[in-house]
Length: 479
Image (cartoon, rainbow, N blue to C red; front, top):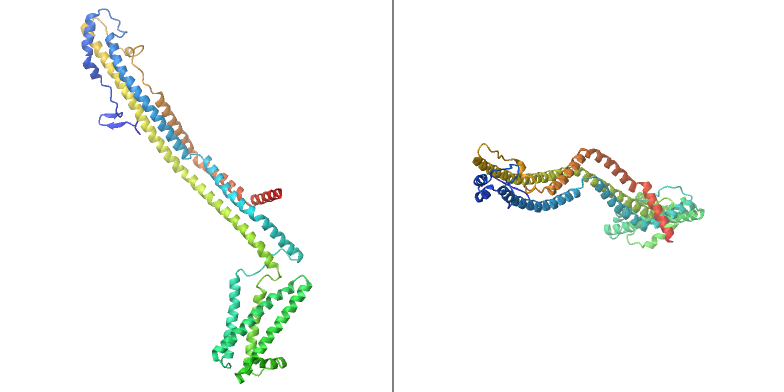
């Protein structure tokens, strides 16, 4: 800063303002000579009054003091601006918990408003789907349980394709030797038969769930379709077994020629491999039926209704989770800011102490400049009176007294109130910071407890229910 003093080998000095030099005045008007001349011309003396020569000396000194005061006033204005700037920066450093609390509330309100805005778009549909789910439960006499269905349909279908592949592999072995096309023909026949077996068995399992339906009519229709599908699957297994036996005897047999023996003697098989083929096929059928039953909830239609509601409910829970995560992150960030406040306070204190030290140096130097001028005036008047006393002799008293420097026509005082005001501002702020540092950890603990309550009050379940209730009321008013 431009007002700070310079440190030199001769001491601390102002920038572009020199010390008072009494020798410059004394060279023009030698005090001892003028004092002797005064004594020679004046026999009767009142030593408590200044002589004309002494008044001239004091005017010279006062001229310097006036310039010093002008310099001090100019710098005092600069200092005051710097003090105000420093104090504003200290205030921005946030040495209380009030701004932290306001920061948390503002950010928390943004999170809360974003959550409300999201729910305003989704709540009506979510409530409608919830009503639909409850009506479905009531109509079908279901308890309030979750629907059970595969968490991953990809994995569920993967198992179905595994069954198809396994059965196709097994069938290709049994048909590979009998087919006129060899292994390639066996693979083709095996894949086709396996595909129809697994797909129809899965559909049969899916239809079998209707045995749980509350409606006797739907239960009867479902069981009837299941039995028809089961009969068709069994016929396919028997047809394939008969086809394999005839194919082993006549590789060029027409597939339609196998239909007649299958219908006339379905369970008449002549070799063990056909029985093994049917057994493996029925085992795959059983697994596929179980997969079909587990494709959705055991009660028909319940999984579909439940999923529609669950998607919206999960979206709501995810939105609530995100809001809570953001609120916890905000809470953590605010606590970190709180922890950093002590470092900020320490830095602010050091900044103020450095400023206070610089201001002290300036004020002391300012006073030193004035004191040097006063000492110069005192020295000059002392020499003046010593010169006069030398002429008067011992019989006359003409001693120097500091009263000569005061009163009308005396030395001007130093203009320092504005500097002291800035000093007072800095010291008051330092006092406040020191007091705050002393109570910091107690105040921080109280703030953290208050912050925890504020965080809980924003997104606990009770607050969320109030939000949702208010959203519902707002929609009813709009309607």
